[in-house]
Length: 349
Image 1 (cartoon, rainbow, N blue to C red):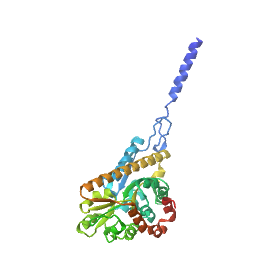
Image 2: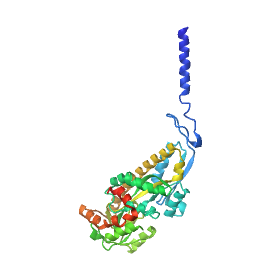
Image 3: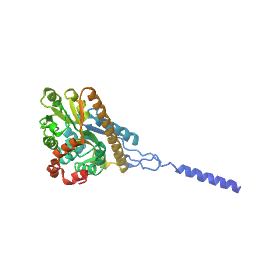
Image 4: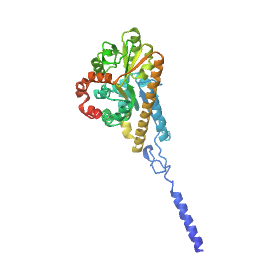
């Protein structure tokens, strides 16, 4: 009898313990965020976030946003969904207004180039200093390190939370006249340069006859000889069929563009801490994915251009040094504008 009672008591206690396990796994917390117990499922308020960028539907920028959408959708059990608006559709094609919309909170997230951000604050131009990065690996290390952290602080001043820094890429000069294998080869070329005082000065120091123009006008201007050449990351140039009116490209590390993958900071600050962590993790994964597919495109485009008769030039070490020496004054001339502390965060000097 005693053995029977002991066995019955043990059975009752085991049943009670099993009933206690897992009982909190589906209990949602206030404001849409459930309590995060070890093996439980956290639920979040259903939200739709609009994503805007200045690139087209087929760009790696939109692919990054789709990757982010997949990742955060999975991590939140479908609570967060992303809508995509390429070519800054929400702001009638205006890139600066596209950034302003994220600052204002009318758009939740966006991806835009540091060159466009420089219209709000010239400090964002620091990324475009000549030969600041020696390779894509070097760019990743600096943008994921002290340099990127310093820029994220600047973004926060404008009401933006940076989820990660993607890549527009190195800006490779093309032209229709001759190979650019040294500084001397740049002299006198009529080059369309993106509208940045720093880029303008770099091409001036390299000897080019630079001018600024809307990108939509550049193909025709190259075709008619108004300009001899232009400078852009390869995916941008290829999407505009630049290889049809340009016969030479110099593949180098002279200047670089990054992409800030940002969220409205008020929105980010309103999220529970665990969702903030998910946002940051998914954002960083998305930009790392975008960097890689962007670089894969570079090689594909080079191969395509070579097949189309475009001469691809990679600079010898002494030629690289010649371009570095010619544009070195930019570091001092733009020091006050970019700030010594920000430059130091990238150069370590």
